[in-house]
Length: 231
Image (tube, rainbow, N blue to C red; front, side, top):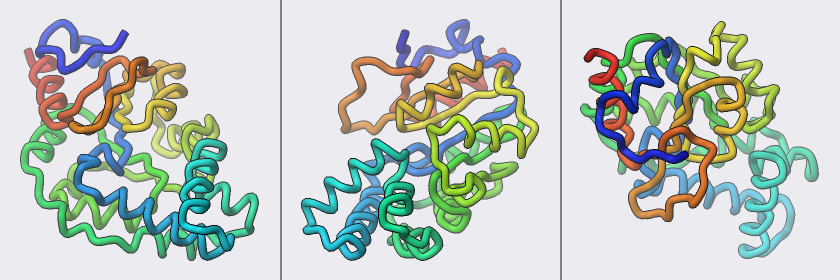
């Protein structure tokens, strides 16, 4: 059952025993309203149009289709068009991040959580690193697992979660996962993780979600967890 922004207390006791906190990057650690990931999508569609000869509308449809079928447009372009992933990733992540600024509340909330924190992203180390620096939270994390580490096999592939968990010796029943894409929480929840869907303030919320909780304010929600664990 979906729960939204519960008050600190018994409702958040499910996070007791969590030793590892896992976060997606784009539209999770910063709000989708910033437009940063929208810019990435725009560059993905432009790249798709160039390599396939599709029109703008056709490229947008292909991007959505490949993301739905393969997990990311990159995987679809690799499988169906032989795209070089290194070139693709460098080009689509060349976006303006100046709209993002330091987020002291998020930094403080992350710091208060007991245990390790990780990034699990379908982007790159470089993109994540630059984004975390912009947000002022680059020193809050103990490790990162990107699309290259995953062998270009994106979430929600079970093999990607398995490789990530093995890399950092994470026990899923003692972990929590924060994501903006509902389908990427299905495997973590099946593995026994606590799951949180992070949504934008202006986007429609899903009628149903595989997550244990849904929040539109990650820093406040993390603070509530920290308060509950210390009470």
